[in-house]
Length: 125
Image (cartoon, rainbow, N blue to C red; front, side, top):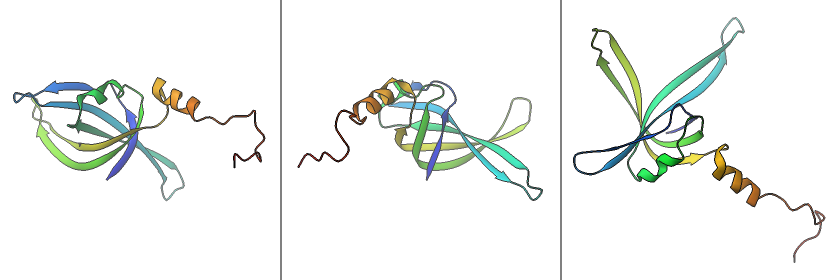
């Protein structure tokens, strides 16, 4: 499954008792549709995400970064201290792609920009 959304806060790295590290972060995915009355309805779904492959990715998962994630989703439910029931979605991430924003993306765009010094029809072969 793929989801696209924005990171809601900077990622955190946790070290488990077996010395394995996991990167935890949250993503908000927006969706909109029109109801029967023609009104536009905006809906945001929040995913609690975990990435187990490398803790280094936490440096690019900062608040507001647009990401495309591949992985699998699972639901969870719990009862809070006040007795109120809650539900949430977990996303076990296997692949992360960033889209726009951040210094790294700006450098990639600059490096791949077109050269306007040559005419468009000037072929190199």
